[in-house]
Length: 254
Image 1 (tube, rainbow, N blue to C red):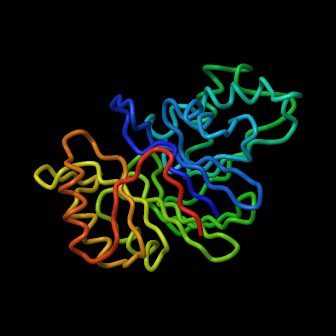
Image 2 (cartoon, rainbow, N blue to C red):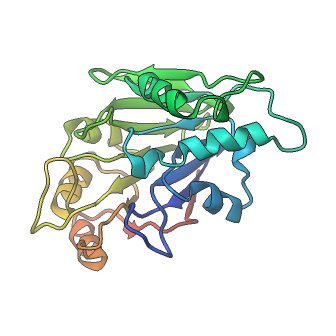
């Protein structure tokens, strides 16, 4: 499985870091995970055309994680050599179908096609969820400590490699449970220790989660400008697990 960070930042404009977006590849299948503003362009820079994607997974419905959904659906109608004729499945938390229906109400036929449909599989917000993604990747979810249908997302390859994306979340026992022993934990670290939030993680929070879950590797993303990345890395590193700040284009394989 190949897990690529497409956007390691936030919606705050940054020339080096796009809004949250990731790509999971296995056995020739490519599934987009989240996708804020600019995702299509950043994908193209690494040679991936969104019109050829095999589906999308969304951690939640906030605009910095799904802002490019409408442009992606519009782009799918353009086609590659011939117009797309296969469905574009989406996996997300409960409520996503209603969210998508609202977008259809605004954009209508610009983002709908009579050649393919956008099939939404909704995953529970009050219990574990599981789905099989294209390429044989297993997706396991648990509710995150956030809003807008937020989920933690764990991806397991057929060979057993596990990558977990925290999504946006505050301190979360579910994240500890899902991240236990994973090969790599990609986690948000949005806010500084001096200004902790209930709905986002600070370095102290990340350190506590890492200490409890003991993943093999930690990659931090989604740092707002007030969060010092050097200090955040130093804080989490004291737990004794390899940790780094993610960047756009970083690839994890296993």
